[in-house]
Length: 309
Image 1: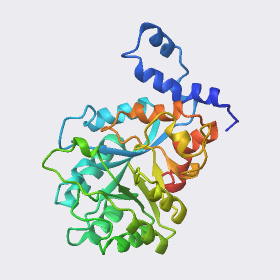
Image 2: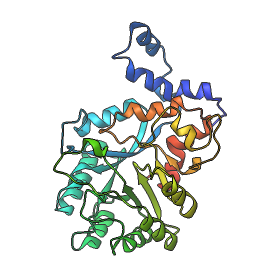
Image 3: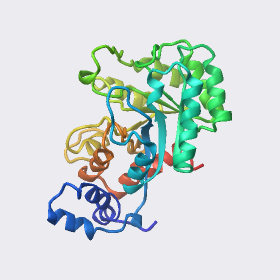
Image 4: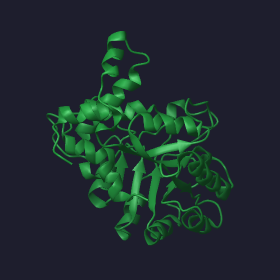
């Protein structure tokens, strides 16, 4: 791919999609700008590593219908989406959850949606669920929801799970949150996910392919520092907030004193449909990133973690 400066890159890729997405509520002048924006196919596409299908348990989401979600993702330059299931939070029949997820991805997003199955370490025979996800449902990875499910990462089976995913060549995604605890349903108590067991387990399995989703770490920053310095885990951007957050995290913002997360370990993740897809896209647009960094976050890093099918 020929070299692009930042301005040209954004015009050909992210900025065009973001402008179009806002045109419905924008002024006539903004809509006119969107109408003359470059075609969507002009730049590299996005691999969204953090979406979920089906119904969020506590309220109706706009894109809970899979066909509508796929159309939305494709409209905004997403060329592949790694999909978990909201049903994984509370359903006890893990095989049924995974079977529905695999079927839904085939029906509405074959070659586009890549299903990530659920394993619940608190239920018996979870190793068989790993086998089924890999061998029967042809899933490229697994997604864990500790906190919502009745276990944490200190569970005695967690290290065994990491070994199994490494042996089978699966990506393991660990979800550190789904929504702000201040808006949880009052009957739900979601325990915080402690990162120390993950760091220790990955020291024993350094070749395991692990990604943390919706991760912010503690206020002191020691959790994130341990993850970045003692493991090879990757991270998505869905939880990063504030003006120029992506640039600040990778040390690209003016005045940045440190690189908190190396750019080659940052993957695009929107947390759609719970979060609007445009939110994640605009994080890249408003951060002071070079074209190579944007391209790496949009697609290249994800493709290294999980090659194309």
